[in-house]
Length: 354
Image (cartoon, rainbow, N blue to C red; front, side):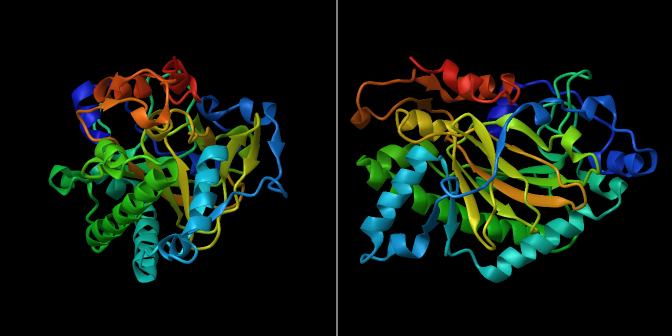
């Protein structure tokens, strides 16, 4: 995705403030700047996470165990088809490494603003610390600071944007994202098996497993019902793996026209299907709209790892899955269209349907 951004030259408007700093001023004045006030938060129905609305849980160990793999594979396929989201347990990522990346990320966001700004996103850039999808000085803003980095292929990393503080950050992120890439590759293979398609046909779209991470810091806001951490959107990638750095919840997904909150399991990875997989599977797997809401008292920190398409390539439904319901599109054109849609729900994905 970062490679595509460099090629496409989408223009973003830079911001000189961090949301964390804005949150500090609000604590004193009590007034939220108009640019952050989101009236739609109250306007849409929220359903409690109750029976019948519990995110499916998939166990990687059962997928890998011949005795249980058939049953767990059916659960995986159902989760991808009916939910587009699931929680992955026993995923194999080293526990010590997970704890270290959580500690390093928390320490980075606790640094003074001037130190975090050493890796600030440059004008019309994508990697670094700051904001994304800011196209004008008039648009509404999300209540989040982020650190966005391209992590795979390794040779295409821009290390100027990788923080040097804390000193363990770079090495930890390198090792952690390598393990996530292995998890993603295993899941892609199991998905190909569930779909009954050739592994290479599916994995070819993700050759080399291009990967970016978006590390999100959502400051608390006492008027949390007036702000939105992340606008409703789908992910313009193949698959996203999300790790909660702390135990503060905030992820919501739209199912059946209503929003409901996801309660992340301790240590689990929350996995969601992206737009590219929905297209490849001819609509069988679903890329689901989701958003992030804010806690009134506590900060929320997450690490989202996006596993993207290999560029250049053409995206279209796999031939084994019947008459195509989506148009085939060049990978660069797809990414350009995704950014131009400005995180407006499923609008762009729907435009690609035949």
